[in-house]
Length: 124
Image (cartoon, rainbow, N blue to C red; front, side, top):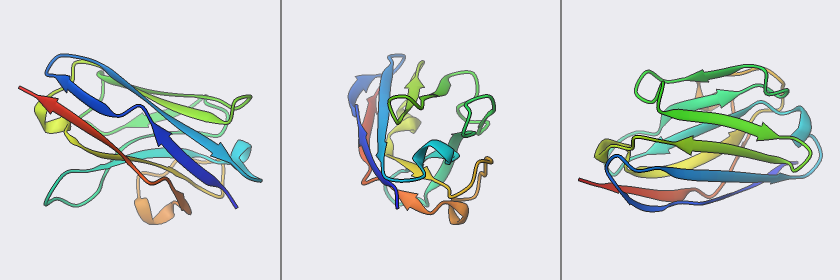
């Protein structure tokens, strides 16, 4: 069982930056591939990016590529999402998720554990 807690959300103006953290606990976190997803009001949840268990592989959606960076520190059981050059369309609740496997997936149904989400609001 893995528990996830996101932190770091907030409000920022367009062009600004925010960093999110996802602290994991429980057996198996070290070996988990991790993903970030987001859900804007009235829209379906969408994939943002993912990182392999070792951190050696990352993958991003086209909408955030070049602006967002995912990293992880397995010694601290924490995954990070650094968001730069934020746009109003990045406004959403951001969720981290863990898989019971080491490989990346862009599909939310492949993720077994989810955090509670943290709000990110970008104003124009």
